[in-house]
Image 1 (cartoon, rainbow, N blue to C red):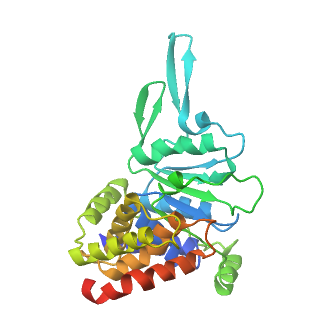
Image 2: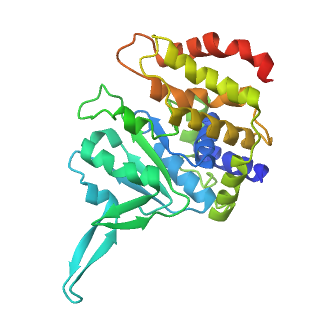
Image 3: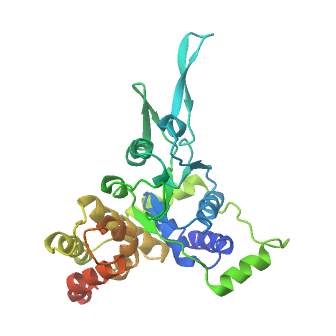
Length: 308
C-alpha cells in the first residue's frame, strides 16, 4: 500500500507546489496517528494542505478560526434544552470531523486552547458528564503565528508536547511561485481527488506500528533523548512522550519509503519536526537549528555505524 500513499503525496504536491518534504512530513504525522503544528505567516498554504489531505484520503475536514473571543463551546459543542422533550440535547461542535484545522491557535485564550487537549489526547469529548467519541481517524492540524506578532498567547509546553510534529512551510521558491501564478486561473490546474479511504488509512496506521525497529535503532533514539536531559544547553529536555513520538514518526517515515524496518536515517529525517518545538526556550541563545546540530553531533554520530 506504500505506493498508494506515494501517489497521494504526489497529488497533494501538485496543489501545494514546491513543498514535497513538508507534505511527506504531514503524511508521516497522520500515519503515526499524531497531530501536526504548523508555524508560519498567513497565506503560506496551511489551509490548502489540510483540505488536500482530507480530499485524497476521503476524510471530512473543517476549519476553526481561533480568535480572542472564541469559547470552548464553539469548538466542542454545547448542550441545549429541548422544551418539547424537556431534556438537554448535545449539539456537536466542529471538532467532530476527521481533520481539524485549528487556524491561528495562539490567538485564542488559554482556556479555549485547552479545549482541544482532551480531544487530541483521548480522542473524545466530555460535556456535562457525558463522553462522546470523536471520528476515527482524528487529526488536528494547528497553525500558530510567530510569537512576535501582536495578540498572540504562547502555547504552554504541555500543549506543545501533544503535537507529534511541527513543520514550517515557508515561502515557495521562484519557480514554484511562478507556476502558482500561471496556474491560478488556468482550466487545467490540478485538483485533488480521493485516492484512499478512511479504512485504508486505518490499515496503514496499523502497518506502521508493525515496522521493525532493532535494538540498535532504539538505543539511537534513547541516546538522543538522554543527551537533552544530561546537558545544560538544552533547557527543555525531551520527555518520554517525545521519545515515543520519535519512534512512531520514524516507523511511519520508513513505511513511506517502502521498507518494513527502520534505520537511523529515518530517525534523522523526522527528528527536526519531532524535537525542535519541544526543546525550544527563550532561556537559551541557541536557535532551533543550532540545538539540533549540536544534538546530532554530540549524541548520535558515534552510534551511526553500530545502528546501521
